[in-house]
Length: 109
Image (cartoon, rainbow, N blue to C red):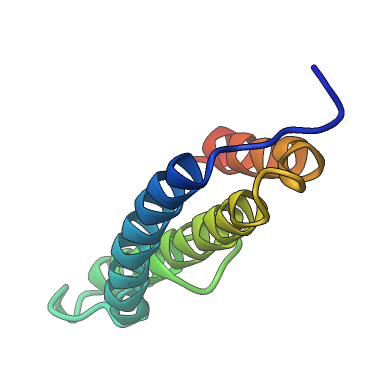
């Protein structure tokens, strides 16, 4: 692979539009996952309270939770978009970092 990548402006615009669309959807998902810390309606039995606590942990507040996973995808896609916005010059530098980030997120799922 060459050390320099140059992308045509229309290709960059199309990629940026795709990244922005994905980021908007991820932002919506992030807003939804904020509410996952609160688990209601499981009942008053001890087992129900434990189930609610486990649901809340998986929803938000730990590195493996849904909220944090969505936020990790937002960071990775933002870096990808920024790399393409530079006209491709930063893409080679950023390519391996965001691929590594996405791969690590997927492996932990």
